[in-house]
Image (tube, rainbow, N blue to C red; front, side, top):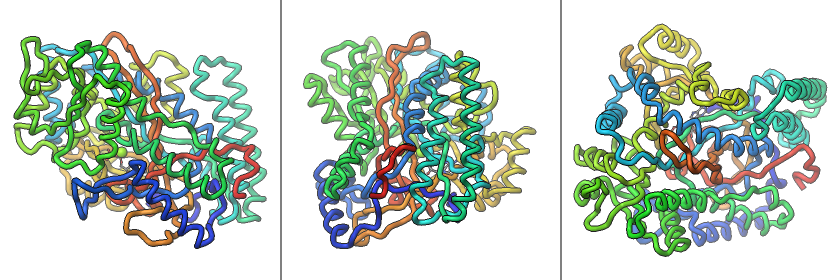
Length: 566
Ligand code: ADP
Ligand code: MG
């Protein structure tokens, strides 16, 4: 959807295509390897609680510029702190969502819980944030890579493109977030490097055109920030496990060092256990709130099993919202009790979409949990802070200053936002509306929903907008489409072609973060691994369970990689 003939292609980590017999053999092995290492899901078409299919995966890892990856990792604790501060800013949340809740019933229901909890005071002041910041490389990055300079992507332009990636990523790295305590001289140096990079790109461009090669440098932009049910804590690391196996089978063990460590499962589960420690009741359990049917079961059970194996004294329970309504009550100190078991920590893997609330009973259950002493992931204010509307508001100039003190950090975070526009019923909102009607192909239209499949893309936007009243438009936001570079590779799916065909793909990286604290203090704040999802370049969205996306993991590339494509 967001790619065209000018879209650059990132070079592959190994030379493709593979010989057919080798491809057949390694794919068959990798499928079994995936199932046997829990890179699996329940089938939606032939559901059985007793069996699993492997989850779709990309056979070899997709390339990602190392410096951009490192920048995303370094930025995560700052994003964690930002979201923590946003979640605790009652005035900001209330004014930002004021128009939205007039027309969006789901967000209004969440907001009503928030309002009631505020009125009575928070029983539990500590929140557990397990966030995932999702991002895509932007091949049309205005700062460093004018799209106009680029030529059509050729099959064998890999080396040159890779060099450009590393070269410019290097310049960005020099301005990296990790070095936030910057000085004026650093800035000058940054500008100098920037100019040099631009110059070298510009002078090399005729060469590239002549060889049919292309430049594929990309910065990255945030797609969204998730504060509820941030999945793939297990499937992220599991993807690396499969692809590490495949690269080794194909004789490329020497390349494994370019696949970054990924301890997402441990990082997230340890976060839950840190919250459990803060609650400080040895008999209390951790409760997972689950859907009625969990297709993505490995991505929940592995969390549960990790906790039991690493901390044998901690029990995990799984309950639906309906079950919590039936079994749950508050004790004398407002502790959440399920039967006789006290709950220390609640981890919501459901509750983020209207379909999870079948009736008032599920809303009552959510409210019961919010008023309880249990530490919630997310608490209601964290959930609201993760709405698309709040993301749009944060991208407005000067808003970040409200939440971040350090000017370097403000600059670094500001750069990750692509254009985000309000559709509220006011002058600015109406201007965005007109802009969307004029050039819909530049945008994606998003409602206040999570979980995929809710957005409207490009040419479909005008019809969708025209069906809404001016007021109804405030339930939505408008966002610039991001144009990620392509990668080429084999996508392996249950029931798919054998051998798989080479397809054009685009990836979305998710960086996990854990933050624990209350309105005054943050007691834990760390980055906790990553996940990469890859979809066909023709698909708008890439949900893995939805069938378009596939598990993947990054293969980091730099300018000094001489051996690519061997
Ligand atoms: P959800 O909460 O449903 O996951 P997202 O904002 O993540 O909503 O959008 C779903 C998917 O749509 C993303 O995973 C991505 O593939 C695609 N998408 C979202 N925003 C953009 C964008 N600005 N440019 C390109 N693709 C986008
Ligand atoms: Mg998403």
